[in-house]
Amino acid sequence: MSAALLSISDLRVEYRGSTGTTTAVDGVSLEVRAGETVALVGESGSGKSTLAHAVIGLLNGGVLTGGAISFAGERLDQANNRTLQAIRGARIGLVPQDPGTALNPVLRIGDQVAEVLRIHGRADRRTAAVEAVRILTEAGLDRPETRARQYPQDLSGGQRQRVLIGIALACAPELVIADEPTSALDVTVQRRILDHLAGRTAATGSSVLLITHDLAVAAERADRIVVMQHGRVVESGDTAAVLGNPQHEYTRRLIAAAPGLDTDVPPRPELADTPSLLCAQGLRKVFHISHSTLLTAVDNVSLDVRRGETLAVVGESGSGKSTTARIIARLERPDAGTVTFDGQEIGGLRGAKLREFRRRVQVVYQNPYVSLNPKLTIGRIVSEPLQAYGIGDRRSRRDAVAELLDQVALPAAYLDRRPAELSGGQRQRVAIARALALRPELLVLDEPVSALDVSVQAQILDLLEQLRAELNLAYLFISHDLAVVRRLADRVAVMRQGVIVETAPTAVLFADPSHEYTRELLAAVPRPAVAAPLERTA
Image 1 (tube, rainbow, N blue to C red):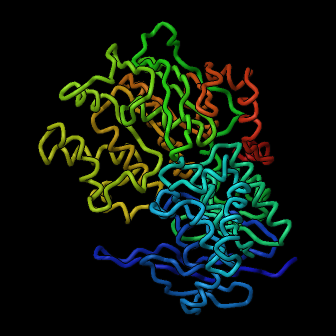
Image 2: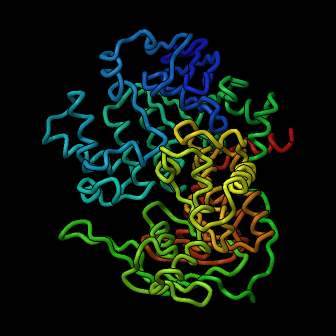
Image 3: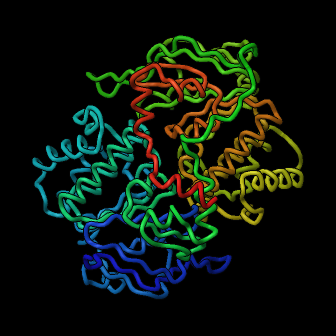
């Protein structure tokens, strides 16, 4: 057995604020050996990301109050900032959780990749630019030369995540801390990225600390699993042992909540004769990347959503899913085509009619970090739509917000907190509560559960199904998670390179996909080999 590359012993981390002290990591011990992949799993807020940031000295307000962190025999918890700066990026690479805030919005992508090479003396300015294109290619970006000249806002969430992975691997570090590295990626690119991480580990003997809420990914990729709850390790061991015969009740709950492709598609009501609430015809959108480069993001897309129906749109990041959703919500203007909502073409709506459309069609965005105002309390954020539309008085709005938070599994005590005090998954729940406040008829959900751990993901999906049944809601559900789509959607439209290549009822598409690309997507979904033992212990 190889020696530990990373050793954490009885680690304790606290956050101290005006409302008191919060213990985020409470006596955690774990090891990552050379050449090993260890998965750290647990709900959002369990302390996983805090633990990762403690290793590299980037706690952002947290205080290390006890324990030790050793890396290759060197005590990181006692290291000065200069030592940590030399290690970060060169010997320990970090793939942060949020691609929306981790990249500099005013620097080109290629310059940001090249920067880490220059900082650590791995290349000069000219060779760093060439190396940056190679790194973007390895990270799975299409047209890497073009992408290198773009800015972060020109890329999809999944593409930005791939850039971060490229930066983390640029200097061939001994340890890669991957904090939800594929949560924004479609399954085909997820497999490519994780294969790339595994290949680097095998080639260089480097190690991976994989932080994830995706138990299928952990089962398929990790040598060992460490399960965290409320800042503590509740179970750890070899992957097959932990997932095949979990000893702790919390681990069993996580496993039971994980969606999969092996269960039957839930029965769906017949909606074939139901009139369409929304109809998009011939949508086309072209972005001007530079004076000589055009990118066709959406190309002659047509789709419809019936009342009470969930239509899922799936495909790779950059396939045009989110652009299509933004056009339908009238947040983006198409270059061609029309969108009709409840019999009315939305392109010409103005004033009160546009305001009414905004009330009836709400959006939940992919990235909870940038969709919430950091200066407002959670209560203010969720109540804003009610206040804007003059619904209720201050007291009734506060009661309504408390009820909405309860629906998305957040306690009423969070009313007076701010987004910075919440985990990524908790912020996404706030975004969902805000979108539900006005009881819309169509909810445009752009990767609404990609940032959530599996148990909360299950609660949100249950909530969406319940609300759809009670309120006859329609959903346009943008997702790269086919297991989630299988559970929630009535029909599925598959997009690739801006074109819808296949649309079919969910059961038909998963049982007998007609397009080769759909078959490729389904084949790329991780399927843990421990499924049979899990069923026996249920």
